[in-house]
Image (cartoon, helix red, strand yellow):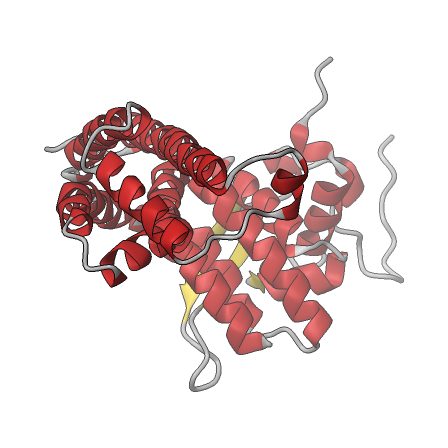
Length: 102
Length: 214
């Protein structure tokens, strides 16, 4: 079975960061900080994930005067529905009981 | 450091066609968030990688154009002394040579500017540059006037001003005239070869990757 390109460690780390708060728009620098990925690794993955429809992107106006508009990214849907490996599916909040599949 | 990094990245992005700048621009925007010098440098290097990735083959004509401009500048630096010495002697051969080389240099500079600005006219201009370089190379390699005349005047001027044979040549018994002729041949052959390689590469890159005229 050919290895899925989306299953690289770096991609999984990035998806993991997205799935922690799937509705939030994220920025490249914050994602790099969170995952430890260099920009030269991060952006090619973002490009690929957007091309595959896993992520959507938008330009956001500058947060402070003098700063350029920022490119932001968000998951387009439920991680599992997008074929994201189960390992990075969002974990339920601590303290909540989860029903085991029978 | 951040201003310099931003400038480098912005210049690199400028080489990309406008429709292929989104991700590189995104990386550039995030550079403003870098907190330390180390982070800035790392982010910039990564940004340059994004430029290469986003540009892929579309960068090739721009790199070809930059190589042409570097080649033109290199020719001035390497062979400028020949023109200077002959002009100082008041020999008219230098004017003939400049008139002979001017079309090649002007077409090369114009073709580079057109290709860097992604103008379809850059393609025929690159071909014209190649044709002119090929003609110039034939004159240089066969040592035909005005190339031959200028080098003859240059060698004579150097001899008249007491040219000293370098020690490595003197040890082998070379005369000043032989050394000067040898250096002239080297300039003509290697210069022609380098110019031809750059012109062929530039013409090929423009033909292959530059958009055709609508």
